[in-house]
Length: 94
Image (tube, rainbow, N blue to C red; front, side, top):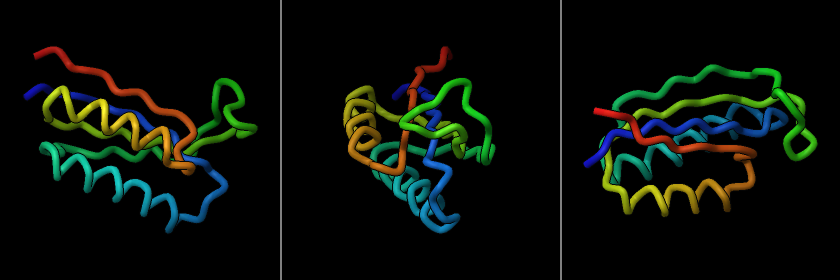
């Protein structure tokens, strides 16, 4: 099991409930396939450049422990979730 950090940017035009549901969906997947240690929500921030015609995004960071095989599926879920406009997953050094 490795430690990971994942940042997602959610479409800022969504309602607060939709944003929370998207975060819960990711947290649920991580907990089913590993252990979520912490979730930091930074809220709405201005993007450095436009992403999918959006100038702002809703930032959320997940810290978790899981197997490397789970990351492939997590990234697939990020790609097919319309609410998520950008993401990155980084393995942390021990």
